[in-house]
Image 1 (cartoon, rainbow, N blue to C red):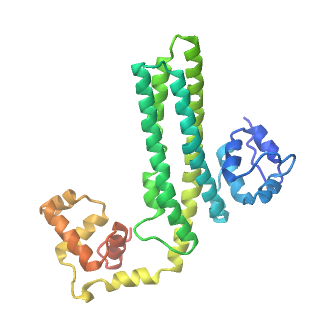
Image 2 (cartoon, helix red, strand yellow):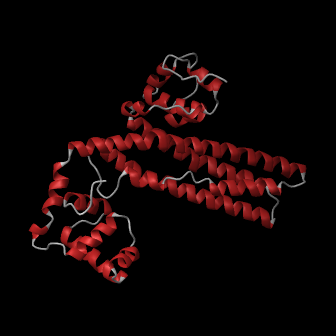
Image 3 (cartoon, rainbow, N blue to C red):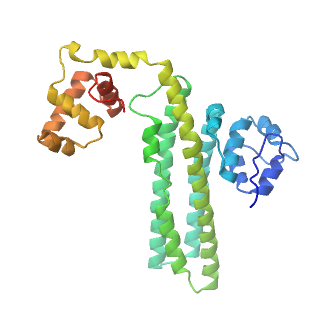
Length: 314
């Protein structure tokens, strides 16, 4: 069995690339250029304004699959954000258009199955682009707010984590169709084989990218949220405690039952069935609850329910 090599600041940057050429994409995402000669990882990172520790955590994960939970506490989140943003830009602006062009050139013009392959690819490209744009427009600004000591209510990294997906099913379907469709024409066959090879590389890169987000980014942001909540506990809880029976519009027992159902993750219909009322009645109760408490998120209702002992913390 080959011994795992964990790279350190004093290793030559060139050694990393020799051991695994996939590091080239990481270099580009960090904004590190070529021409570094025999410089060490630390020297190259410092010259390009990149946090060495964060760089090595990502490299050791993508090359060896190694990461330590203790590393999360020492990451530079701004460096991590720059890396993820640059990775998205590479994927959306270069890799997807390049692969589409490859496929178009490799498929016979006017071929119906060829058009289907392009359609599946376009659906995949649209799906993954939407996923990454969501991170750009919603998640990353949320994280930058945490860095600055601000937290957007009604959203947290757990929400992102639950919906985070490696989005690989359509890509697997596309590869399967191409393998079954390889034409007999040697010219088209070679072009399609090359495109298929690049699709496999693309899938491997996407898995690595998803691993960075799952193993490094999400835990790091969870730590940021934890630190923020520890530093700002009183205003949130005190406002929820005061927003109870003392405001002149106390929740009815039925409204409290609806709050519990919402916190438990039940749908309006499931709450209605449980309480033997109509779904429209549940909707009305939820509107009244939001008006009385001035709480419009499930996270807010959860805290309210815990503070007012409607549900147990567990």
